[in-house]
Length: 254
Image (cartoon, rainbow, N blue to C red; front, side, top):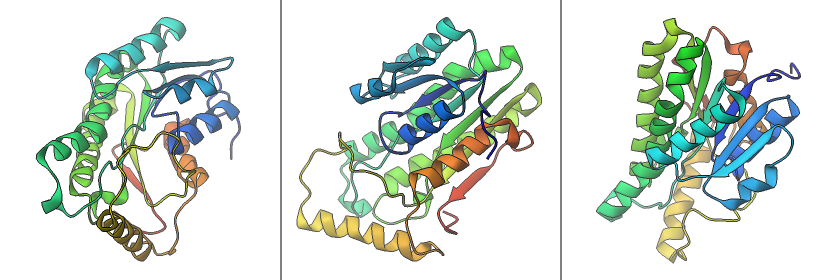
């Protein structure tokens, strides 16, 4: 691994408080990045240090994304890299069991923060003539018991491809990583605070079983395995790659 790939780079990371986003932030700190870390959880402030600004914002609304982008620009004058990590399944169940409000919430959670943050950051990247965006998608675009989430992440894939077409000749690269099942510490703040019923636990286990079965390696990945792919696409080492969705699922193509 090339060390200090992000020295003198300003990187905005969303969903940085827990899981993959937090590990990405930690790795970026090790590689010399100047960071703006955003989450709606106060846990994000645990990462605050020299060269690291942390803030809370609701990225499901454009105002939150605009605040995050403006904070980075006001403090550092530029944004070199945007890593869109907000999202995640809230409910797991066969599609006919989703309530309409739940479907809307899944899409609001896992598509709109990426749309809004791309829109908020893009003008400054185009003005400076360079930038890299890495969107976090999911292998769940081919999965069971989470159709709305899969549909939202399918939207992330389409956004990635379309935006890459628009910006490639203007110096901005846009790619995505599609993580498969990933071992991570239990979330301190869960996405869903409801106590699952026996049936809901069975539906979730079906996801685990299908994920392992679809992976050629028959295992979950690690946080570092996901972070390594994300940081590669964000770095100058991927300077000739754009419009790509990279599956990181042990052979599961999603």
